[in-house]
Image (cartoon, rainbow, N blue to C red; front, side, top):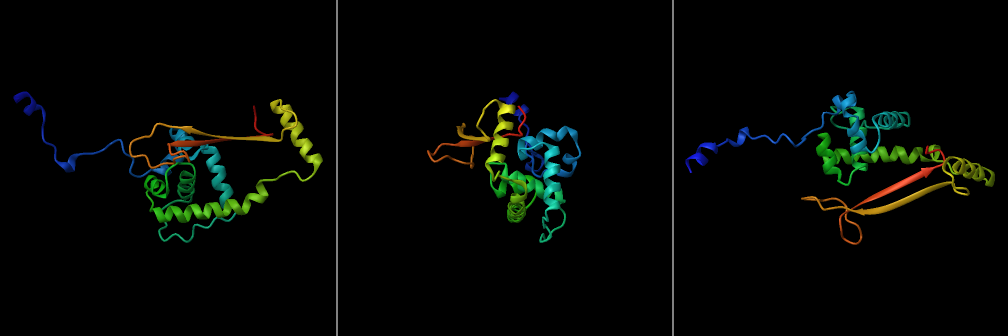
Length: 191
């Protein structure tokens, strides 16, 4: 008993720290650090290079974050908040917590990003309108991927996952936790 008492010191609540929890993301440092490249792929579902291209695309297409009452967050961090929300199973609160922003602010930012993407969709996404253009797409797909008569492919599956503690993510219609995985293969996708 004396050994136990000697080894169990009392620690004041103020000195306890949870070093495993990220309270606020230091995004500006991450953007310029090569060591953080995997974070973009894991949390935003794109490479850092693609993120920079998306941010530039949004800026060129008239994104307006001017309604923000607080100007302390960089343009890139705002885009990150929207992509973090769109790429995760969590909600606005989780994205806001990771970015150090209020839930309502992440909602405003995400709404603006989606507005710009929707407006630019017709300029970015084009579907062939003639039989000749469809044949050209099919021929290119066949030469790249070996499937004649195909212009592209889309597939999706629900993958059952083990439910983490305090899981608030998505449940499928059969009431078990699952992730929705989708793949799109276009004629220009490299093999």
